[in-house]
Image 1 (spheres, chains in turn brown, cyan):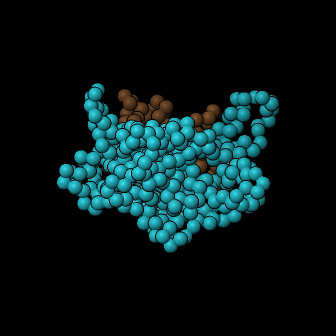
Image 2 (cartoon, chains in turn yellow, red):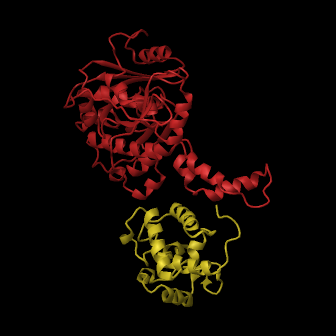
Image 3 (cartoon, chains in turn cyan, blue):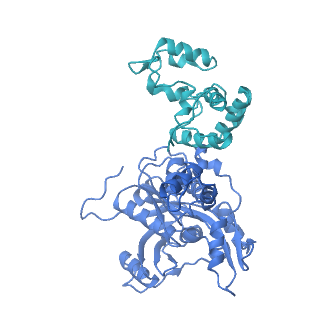
Length: 138
Length: 355
């Protein structure tokens, strides 16, 4: 499945979950900051993605396209390093990075989740480039 | 939040300042009353395979209009949507829709227990078990069910969700309770709210009942309970909500008062409940007198609204503008004979008195 199709399908899923028209769900909108998603909605999205794409999908994988907080190369003192930020800005050019002028703390990571970041990770899952989760994330 | 009464302090007086309701005969109390005045009845559609059983859905309404946070709709089943709509109507009817200061307002609703969305549960159970499953392997069974169910499934069915949805969507953060029971639950909810306002736990409460008998699984249960030759039965759905307010607060803001809630009692029988209620407000020494009995004529025409019945009855009686001093009784009995009684004192005034 090509990236654009993934983005279209995920946009529909996010729109449905957050009760918004698909036209209001921008590819680079922060699900949390721009679309009002809460942790309860991430549970719903995880299940909907599993059902739609026929794979096991852990809730923590919603973050992975944005950034893997366990990656020690990119985290220092609870904040993302400059090189990590630069990499993210490269991956998500449409995201409104000006909101993070003073940097990104690990606690800010949910704000970076977008349809585009989920699509990027899902693409790797579908090709097998990224591994399936080991257990349930209930 | 209001501080509860000091020991020995008198309970406060509680009045009804707003009404809201939906049922098969109308998506508002006004349209419902007009339909009843025209002699209309909820006839419903025949339930397949259940002769004499009919299903009458509520008049069409758009729940989204009343949900400030519409993404919560995916967590709101039919009765929760009806509850939010009726509560919003009641608050508007009380002239409080623009009142942003809802600090400490209580929500108490009565509903039947959910059937746990048994169709979704069945789908999860029907999925093939992974290879090597042994009979009696509980952990494998559990994980199969969990993997097949949306994690939000339980949140739709928790017994306190009607109160939760009303509290969230109408932004009321005071005491919040859902009475889960059978037919008397809505009347109980109004009674519990009455006690809360009287005791000083809150100054304003929205209280009532919301229920829907029309889920296919529930219809199947009702059908299987019927004996041959049983009288026709119309199952329906409804919500009715009252705004209860501390009396001096209502008078001070010039609220339109439908009536005063004088007493509430429950008991294992209707007789006992009535006696208890009458004694508590001192209307008599226990024998009901001078009371216009409830079971408003409208209620039978609306079908069986389960836990919403008592609240709907109260709303219809109060909306009929009882004369000052008219005494109204709402009496609801449950399947096992248990009963709830609410007593109201009519006021028939459009402008509140000065004192």
